[in-house]
Image 1 (cartoon, rainbow, N blue to C red):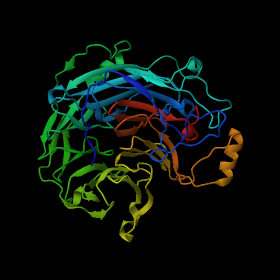
Image 2: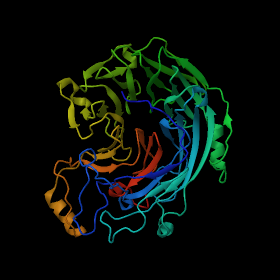
Image 3: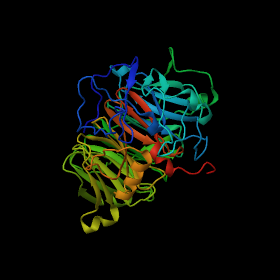
Image 4: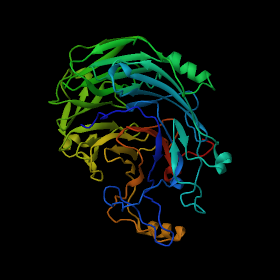
Length: 473
């Protein structure tokens, strides 16, 4: 149930981001390479972990002022499958400011996101500085990247809308991306129309984020008060405008659109959990079915056509269930992450048989803060934890001794990889403090964005490039 960002301070400069990708670390040239295990290995006095840029196709860091507990990637019209750098992205994010009146929702555009393609086994060692410096917007650029996907730093353009109270969670509607819903820590769920801001960002090529920016006062389209604050909210992927919101008083409310700018909220809530509702996910295939998870350790499946009681409920973890993700490419699969650091994968077709767990991982030792299936690979998901790690998993992978031997031969070095790492663990990203939320970009295969107390990271691991479509896709 770890959610708030404690002792929030406005970020003035982020001096260094250190990260570990693909389990790699810097090493003394005369010694065999050794995989550094987060949470297991200890740094000696004077030692410092540094990012290995060769493990990323793209890696950038930025912030918009106050820390953001939640954000969402806004679907754009720049192409359904984009594989060429430089890239452009649109986001919405809500702040966690020191005073309630200082909060806002940021609508922003990040352009000139540079990157490059690399082979899984580089033909020669990567050169250049491995540190990633960041002010308002920086990257792991080097001069050699110009012909491989742009040059220079990304450009951040930002517009702010006042928001009463901290933003616990924010979500953009997939079908109408200018419509966003926000959860406030004062108990209100609000729906906003950000079309004017997104249009202004789309038309502007020069307006920057640096300097004093005006904050727009804008009224929400609708404002609904729960009996307590909450974090759970999700737009229906099938029916535009249909929404569910859940609060810390165990109540879940259904929102039905009556027009493009109006909603009817059913004042009779769905009741079934005995503690705070932490997350909600609509089924990707059934327009009336959604799942919820709770501090009570359970996951419930609901069908809005069958009344206000759960259609199914089961014990999912031995601690709070913080987050869930419904696989949109394999709709029988539901992932969940817990306060005890574990996450599980369930096949919902096996619920009636009792044990629906098809995979369970105990790699993380601190609470899971976010979990999300890849929108492009049915077996791949990303997980973030309070241990300051963002991990990527491919459930289709199995240990292959022959393949590992072949890899070592190609790299021409002895890689002392720990034996107890799960074979499904594809990538480890570090460098952010107090990781809170992660999202895959649905239009840029392999791209992930994460938010933490010290800002945002945009990353594309190089070892998942084999899942990308060909350049002609």
